[in-house]
Amino acid sequence: MDYIKSGTKTFRHASLALFAGGFVTFSNLYTTQPLMPVFSKTFHISPTIASLTLSVSTAALAIFMLVAAAISDAIGRKRIMVISIFATSILAFLTSFSPNFITLLSLRTLLGAVLAGVPAIAMAYVGEEFDPKSLGQAMGLYISGNSIGGLFGRLATGVLTDLFNWHVALQFVGALSIAFSLYLWFALPKPQHFQPSRTSFSDIFKKLGGHLKQPGLFLLFTIGFLLMGSFVTMFNYIGYLLTEPPYNVSQTVIGFIFIVYLMGTWSSAWMGKVADRLGASPVIQRSLLLMLLGSLLTLVPNLYVKIIALAIFTFGFFGAHAVASGWVGDRAKINKAQASSLYLLFYYAGSSLVGAFGGFFWSGFGWIGVIILITLLILLGFLCTYYSNQYRQNSYASN
Image: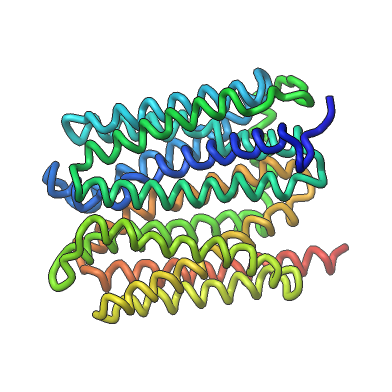
């Protein structure tokens, strides 16, 4: 019944298994993002419709995370993660054989639903099974699996689509995911500290409703919605811009543009430390300023300036997201897990709703229309941050 400690063989296997879980989750969730221009040409659909390949997955993920967490309380963490990751990998492989867009969209919706069992459960597993002194290292490896998986999925599909076609690209990511799933199944230790408990859905919704009634927390959830909405909109449609004249870049180049995601690995940690000194609100506002600067710089015609602008925008996004999500845990005094789930629900809802809605701005007004939408979202983010901080200060004053 000992906890998993750093430096042991069990820790190494458990951490790498969780890394594999994070890798599979995010490599498959975002694998269609660089392929949207290809889908538009292949299936003769608009950018708005093509963006649904990502939006339906993130929407299903957001909804089913709440369900997966409740089910895992009854039947166990590892069992849900194993079922989820295998189902995701198999669906990802089958998606490559989609004969039409409706089939592709249906499989992507199912993929998002079954995918929910990993991100919803992994953090709970870490908190229950790892020694408190080893939690940071274990969680760091899991989060790195998220970011590296997301980057790899985009890069691999871009390169392999150029070399072969999008079918081969998705087959490769799916097959690799199956291999990673096998590793998680065998390497992840059986939970030793999990205690089954049955929670009714009415009880869950009561806890969620309690958080939604708090204005300060609700504004933080809205910040997550605005952040992810602007971020996904930027990267959903930048591919359309760059594959058109005068740039005419290849799918490989589109894939490699996502390397700017590595900025997030640095900014999330650095901005978190700054927030410890200055407070969450001013750091989120500074991060939003960076996002605004980066988005406006993408209007400069030069390709290299656009890439630098994307890096600035990405740096600001990950910094704001890291601090905002941490602020949720600080503001929620009880039922913190439900509060975090609500933040993620709003976060992925922003990806689904705004990411698809941005297609109307691209189709109607071009790139400047996309930037106008993103600018409006960022300005709303400033307002939400300011008023959320005001509610926090008023709460302290009343106490």
